[in-house]
Image (cartoon, rainbow, N blue to C red):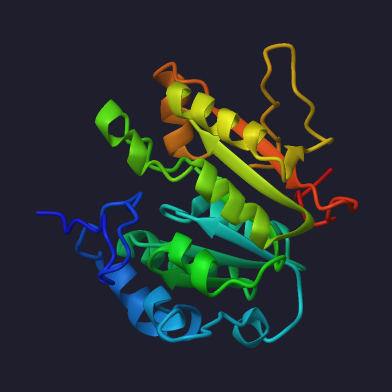
Amino acid sequence: MPERALTSDRPHDTRIRSYVHQRVRLSDGQESAWRRLWPVLGGEVAEVVGGPGSSWDPHAAFGRNAPLVLEIGPGMGETTAALAAAEPAVDHLAVEVYEPGLAQLLMRIEQLDLTNQRLLRGDAVELLERAVAPRSLSGIRIFFPDPWPKRRHHKRRLIQPGFARLAVSRLVPGGFLHLATDWPHYAEQMRRVVTAEPGLRPDDAFPLGPDGWQARPEWRPTTKFEERARIEGRPVRDLLYVADHGTAPSDTRRVTD
């Protein structure tokens, strides 16, 4: 049975988790990549946030000072690795709870010989709350998060007003928040959340169309999962917003213009 991870081990934390932690066996290739590469490229959120004043130091992790983009829930890492390969001057941190996905991403990192990708296993919200400095991220990407389609589970969805406020607080002025989903009801909820957040505004490079939605950016890779959604008739919606801290948007908000 899956291991439920909807509440923290800390007694005072009653926040509802947006994920369920499943223990799944790794393939031989994934197991090999995990054994060889995880000690070098991976880490645990629990260790990063383990004590008072804890923080995650990207300069130490990547060995350089570069813009940093956080991806929450990279799945099997197909899009994550492709975007990291397309942005060698930008550092990329992927946070995931699904071990096979992390292991598969390690395999992609090795295949593409990436040096600008690091991984953490655990709760990304806890990482943002307790270890990521304010105004330190150039972008946050969340592609196809768990839609929790049943009405009674909607409270478990990641994209909520509180999360939007947290995300904005961690973005540099002009830093981007890029969301994507293939569930219409969740897309509507996402749009309500980001439009209601005063610290966010639509990215000028992706104006709203006549239907009120932004066009899908051509540079976001299309995965097999997304293609299946299209075949099944579920429209994919992208929301591209930037932190409005009163300065020009960051140059790292997109792969190509």
